[in-house]
Image 1 (cartoon, rainbow, N blue to C red):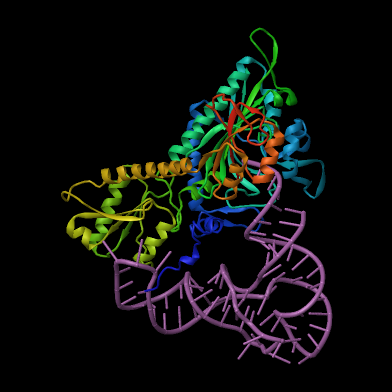
Image 2 (cartoon, chains in turn yellow, purple):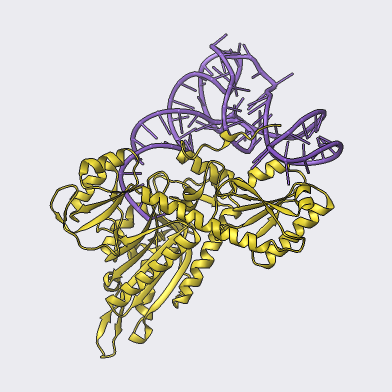
Length: 481
RNA sequence: CGGGGCGUAGUUCAGUUGGCUAGAACGCCAGGCUGGGGGUCUGGAAGUCUGCAGUUCAAGUCUGCACGCCCCGACCA
């Protein structure tokens, strides 16, 4: 018997970056493409994206948001209308200068984000207070010419949703931006089982053109942090640049206040990193394409029948279940394959199970096999499996939450700060005077940047970790992906 | 965009001081025996050795240039 060559996948603990890439490629989530920096998302990975879309789309619609589509190409001049915006995005743009064999009069930018092309339309569509709020969302792709790429986390082209709303007042816009944050938080924590920190970005880290950027950040097992989503309060910056005005009830011409918010295929990267182990992917039950894989160990009629009975019963209750009855693969091969692909529960059906009226269940998150006796032949499997899926979902979240707690360091000296960044990394919670200069120096010296000021942060008295001047809040710092 | 590494079968790679009719393993295809942790036997298909130019009787191997990919930094969701 040949043993599985574990060298095909590096260990998560010792070769984290390599492990991450191996798991994606071998798990058939994605593949490299002929175009540098662009990735192919394979069916198994795309199915995860579809589940993400389906959950978020439903929640957005619950807030009254409608989906729309805007063009891939944006006139170059549009981007220039908002000063910070163009400065932020210029280095990353792909620009089309030739069309149909002829040089274009005005270059077209491949959208890096759609604010400008949408708000040009908004300026025509919004005339009256009755037109507000205007709540639109796009499911599309965007292009940002990244110098260095990494599957799912940083690719030149990526998929996302971008929501864009216009409101009558600053407060309305702020409330909406925060409602979106709640949706993202619920999604990240309850569906992806990844705990997030929710807060506000510093001036230097905010979206180019925004007044306030809110973000959700998650700590990964290697001690770095991934931004899981953002929700921007754009103030009236774009309204002024694009002249988006409405007549209020008193007949006064007013600028609108806007939000934009996004969550991308990047979260799939976070999903892989957060839960995976040396065997491969570990997918939370609520997001995985397949929740239960049934593997017939015997080829007897009785075993085949039993597999099919289990499948029908689980399917009837909405569980995503699949039988792997491929003739050409051996049982051991199938075990390894579905572990690599992160299926939460495996049910093995052979002669023992039939004879003893029991179920052999393998839990992917714990890599543990257990045998469950059934009281009689008519007892249903469903409650067992449903409860177990819930239990796994919770266990994955709790595990990550515990990890975050253990790797969040409240520090009071810069030496301590530096020491942590040099060794175990993780989240650092420390006073900062909010001077961009201190922030830049800390980043240059330790790689840690400010991540967020928690939404519920209380005002305290302290001294900036770097310069020692008076500081009123503690911020989260970490090295970001 | 800087620094490093590498381009040979689908994949990972081997290929000696230049001698090649270019190999292995895994994978793939056909069939047999199997089946509780990547099982096994037999047979088979598969290559513009990244490209271009040069040196040479002879280039996968040496030289130059180009292109591509991977890794590490700065930029970024």
